[in-house]
Length: 255
Length: 163
Image (cartoon, rainbow over all chains, first blue to last red; front, side, top):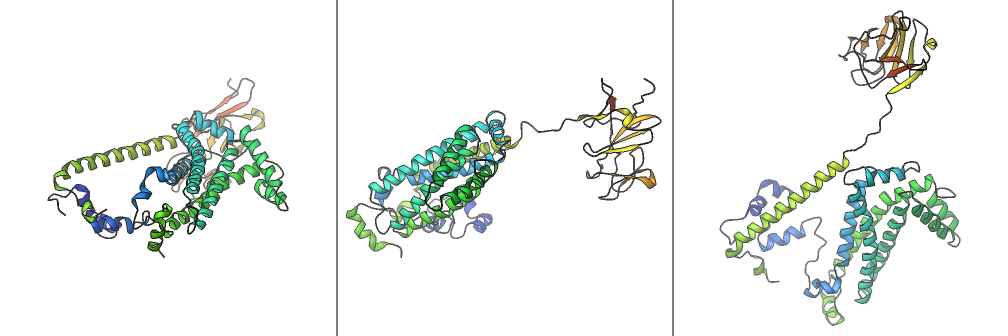
């Protein structure tokens, strides 16, 4: 340490409690700062090297990161809403009205969830456009593009299933029309529609199924695929570069 | 980025520490605020509660000397020569439902063996407080009415013949 008097963070980082939680050298030295990233579960997917070009705001507009941040906001606010929401045809609408008019901070959490959801659809589509315009879908990133498409479909699935949950007219008819479209699929349409609705029309079974999809199945799929998506970014050599720099980068790719 | 860049510059260290401390303080305050708001969010502003006053029928449905268990209300309605009284069937130990003990003229709890006498006073077992007495009244149209939301002292009877 060059400085004579270490700051309180450094002092804390040398303590026994801190060192039992965080492995490796404490931050402050070059090696310690590097290990703080490599040996941390939540940060280890970050690349070993970053090229300055990929950090430019106008190259990525941070759209993927913003989409992930929105997902975190949606997960946190969604869990909070689950404390009051009841997925029953008698009580769903009234529990949303309670959240809106009775519960403290209910309107804030519900609107955070709602607007973050709309924003996530927009941001994910823009992210896809950015990846397309920078040709980042090309080899060796083809599979990550496919994972990204699946993440887009999951995002739309969240929107579709979430819309029914307030059990209002907009949600009810969106689910009716949406599952009607599913029913038009060749060969499997009728069966898939029956699986989604748990019946012939949008009723209690459909509400419960959409709720379980929205709060359990889709989040698990989303988390797994997001982890894969991030991991592949690193394995595919970090973010894409302009063609002039891409050829030299390919030699440094992580095998 | 060169490795030298990561080393703190000595002349800027105190200012950097100040900003770092201020940053941590703001972050901690924000997290504390969000946690506080979340606790407030979880504290229900309305609590669904059953109506505590119930009409339980006409007096002549309960003959003198009878002890009727009103399952829906978890109350014993007892009638003797002194009149009507309503005794809570909720055990004061851990809230099980006590049953009439015909052999001993009292009540016993099937969960942990507490026994209460006819007046609801604890006799044996872990329960230490007496069963609650609820007020019995006559409604305008001549039906019996109990209020499980209120507990009154032992010995309060509703006597019909003195009215």
